[in-house]
Amino acid sequence: MTGSATMAGNDSKLDPEDLDPDDIESYLAMARIHGEESDAHEWVSDLEDIARVAWRLMTEDQKEAFKAEPEILAITDAFGDFADDQNADF
Image 1 (cartoon, rainbow, N blue to C red):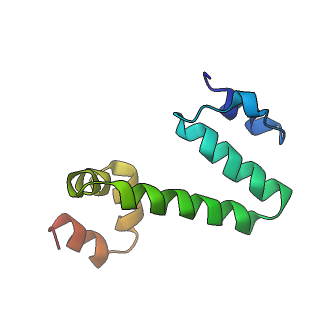
Image 2: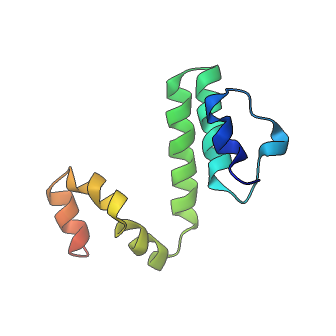
């Protein structure tokens, strides 16, 4: 698959043949469609599940690299002291 799951983002129907188990976009598309078919809470719940599984599988070095990514720092910066503690290896 080359972006098929992403392209399906404009269409709630996702053909299982478009899914690539090696592409995170497929999992994100499935979560989005699950939310569209039920409600937004399901979408958020699925995304949280994806994040928790990924975190659980990460090594400590991978977790440190994750926390240092600009997108993650932008989120943690919104919480002030929490971000400072993360940057100080709290």
